Amino acid sequence: MAKKAKPSVDKIVKKVNKEFEKTSSQIEGLINDALKQFDNLQNQVQEPVRKLLKDMDELRDREMKRFNDEFERRMNEFHELQSALLERLGIASKETGKSVSKSGESTSKASGTKKAAPAKPAAKKTSTAKPKAAAPKKAAKPADKSDLTRVKGIGPATAKKMKEAGITSIEQIANPSDADKQKLEAFKSLKGFSELSAEAKKVL
Image (cartoon, rainbow, N blue to C red):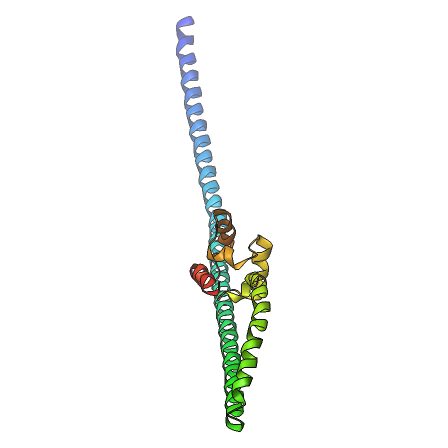
């Protein structure tokens, strides 16, 4: 009886093993199917997200480019307007100087045509009056050195900012010390900055 029982136990074990292998293979198949479905879902979710991120990057690049272009255009317009104003101010000062010289010439000619003889003492009077007029001009020179707008390329707004930064005299621009150079570095963006020192020396 014991010999006959052994084969029946082996058969049962083999059947159990077969069933276990079948169930394990089925479980593996189910797991593989689930993983495939998960991968598909992940790809379906990632593609719209990637597209959205790409669109956002492109939009950001476009907006940054548009902003930079607009900023450069505005800065160019500002520099053109500033140079035009400076040119107009320079022309206006030249025209006023010419008109003053012309008026002086016309008055001298008129005095010369009317009375030639008394013109000589009149010239003496003017010569005696000239040193008197020259004295206040000499006293006014230190005040002129603080007027930074006399330097070509510096407008009223820039002069105000320079004074706030500590540049209060034309001499500081013409012959800047190390401290003055550091202060002037803040105005690097000013048009014609490299020529400011030379222009200041011309004014002094």
